Image (cartoon, rainbow, N blue to C red):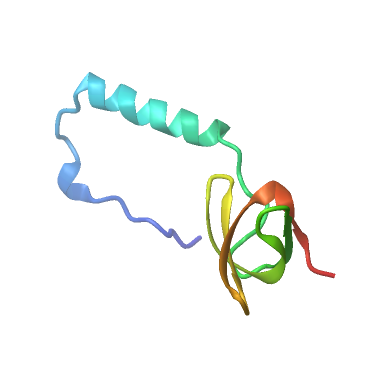
Length: 87
């Protein structure tokens, strides 16, 4: 099995403050319960929104529920709930 992340051994054995450990656990818990976009970078999708109109394009990036869609007319930002896969 290939590991994509190798732990830095320079931090092994160093004391950890309780507040930093609690803060790290809180961030991980919030990230796990946050809504996620079902589309991956590179997926071809159609966005239909009353403000941006209907645009066909490719997902360039996403952050939470916001998706950056690259189209022939430019770059548009959609909520992932307004996107559907291209036919």
